[in-house]
Image (cartoon, rainbow, N blue to C red):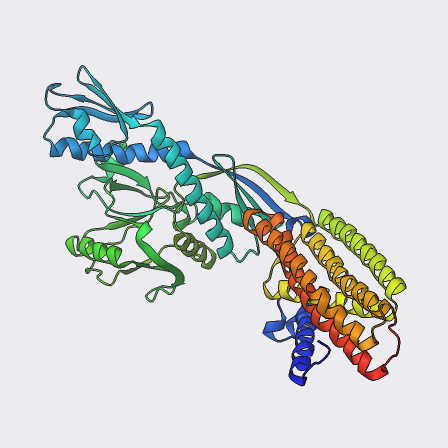
Length: 525
């Protein structure tokens, strides 16, 4: 184990040089970092507890989701009754249920007809009065589904903004905890999260006159939807559109959306593209309604309602209006991330100031430096020259951890600092195992070369066992943990692998180089 080929020495030195190069950007200013090559500009991101940031507690508005589902259920009930040729009246949503009256109470098995829509529907019928609602198992199942889907979409939207390492996790049955390090002004993020971004395409009811629209009285199957006030001129009242309630096409079939500029006007616009099924449906709808206006509705506001001049068969379209570059970027982001199944309400909001982060960094740095100083003093006093070798290897270990975290653009938190300090202690502990084994061999009368050889060889099995055990625990912390626990698991895992490299290769290379240069007759420990 005391022989190093030239290529092995070159690889070890190259790895150490790469660690120094990748860790260096963390210690220089942003201006100096900008002059470095692109691969050297990555740095470790500081967590919420180190640099401050924003804390948002969001609540999923499940009642709003249920009201929307009841509205959709009303259309399904209407279609089912018409298909079964059953007369009804007063179809409406009341007290969390869809209610209506049968013209002929003996007209058919109304429960069986309604269960064809969904077997889980709770149907009550008596005296010609019928009520349809959702069962408790349906509510429990949908609540979990809505929360999980909201978690995924919140993560997409936050990550699309370029935010590094947000902490997003569920809390309770209907809440989402969001922590964004380094974000001192969360207003833009709150605006993005607060929009449901549900896009649908509707035809307009062209039979209604402006006077009828102004009166607010609409026929069944028609809904009055205001235009988006952000798309109108300043101080102008947004128009109101008479939109057919039937959804011709839903935005959940979008596969891409990106900002751009309209070829005709040069104004900012949003380009979108459907999947294969959506493209076919879009082509059929536009082909069947040439010459008619087609409304694009986002979050219950009409963004635009252009007239279909020709069939759109390619599955692509453009949304125009009084967009700014920022609003076009935001809309494209929301459409790419997908629509929230239910609105999100901000229950709690806190901003962690950078002063707290500075205090945390100072306290963590002080504790880390003090701990490292004690370790270095112990190693040098007990093992002399070999203790200095171990200290140098520990420094290389810290640089490797920092370089790998920079390469991964990982987030460093206080528990992460604790993980780094712990791995530095483990790196030294590995050297202690080797050195004590060398002492035992020297006391047994073995020559220096053989004592060093046996020290590395016979301690190797114990080192591997201890590192695998600790690495397993670190991986479990990362897999099952959340938030800062994951950060601790990451830094501990990286540190364990780095300590194995430094103890088995770097320290051994320094000792072998010293051994071949000095050729001692006595072991200096």
